[in-house]
Length: 144
Picture 1 (cartoon, rainbow, N blue to C red):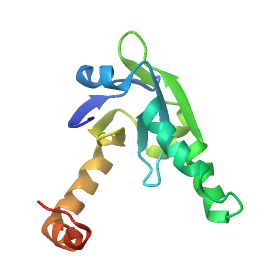
Picture 2: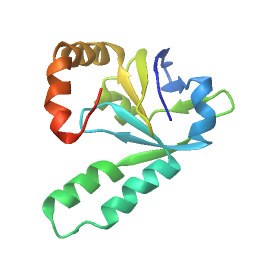
Picture 3: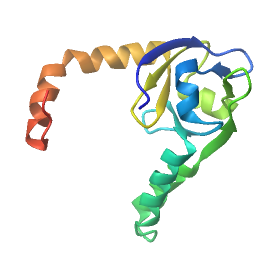
């Protein structure tokens, strides 16, 4: 499982060092995907393959399916270099608002890479309604 919150700095070339304790689980190649919330999701290849397999079972004639596939497959495969860094493409950096300080958050089967200010604001917003969220999810089987 990929867990934890890590503060890092992306260099001026768009390289980001990944936490050492997560690198082994990620493997040598990863898939970057600019998510719906405008953070970058970083998937080990096997985890991304499961998403692709799920998409393959959907009806491609459906406009929404094609739009979701466009967003999900508009990604970048990249290698983790010997120093444990990835290179985030300029277009993704711009759309995600990444510049300098970033937060890397483990999300079970993938990592999320956020601009630090955006992550902290989003975290504060969600934590403010934490108890209500837990209560709302009880009918779905969430037990805390």
